[in-house]
Length: 167
Image (cartoon, rainbow, N blue to C red; front, top):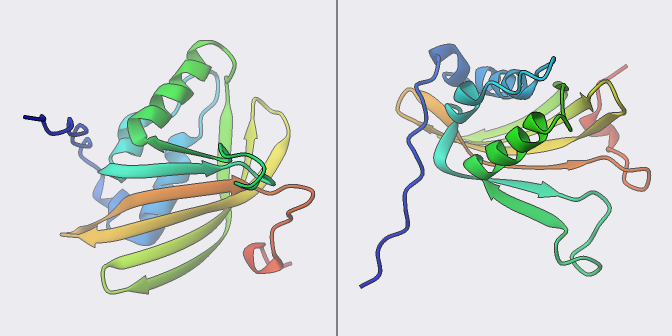
C-alpha cells in the first residue's frame, strides 16, 4: 500500500495586516523577500503568505519550450527558500531588493489574479524588471497566495506599456 505524500508544514501565523487585503499581501510579499547585509529574507513572514501547497514558477525570459524544455523552474515554497538560503549562506547573494512598480488586479468572489510589475536588484548590481503573476484565494478572514509565477523583461521582450508606471 502506497503511503500518501508528505504534507508541507503549516505556515507560521501571519500578521492580519499582511493578509486581510490584496494590497497588504502583495506589499508583504515584496517586503519579505527584500534584505541587505547578508541577513536573508524574512522567511516566516514569506511562508505565512502562502497556502502550504502553493507552487512557484520561474519562467526563463526569452526562452521557449521549443528551444529549451527546462525554460521554467517549478518549485515548492520550501524549495525556493532552500535555494535562496544556499545563495545567501555561500555569499553569492548578500542583498536583494524588489519593489512593485504597478499592479493590475482582477477579482471574482474569493479568487484574485494580480499582475505586479517589479523592479529588482541584487548586491547593488544590475536593476531588472519583470512581472509577478499571483493567484490568490480568500479563505476565512484572509487571502492566501496559491501560486506565483514570474519572468524578467529582456531586450527582446520589453514590458508592455500597460504594465509600466504612467509618467
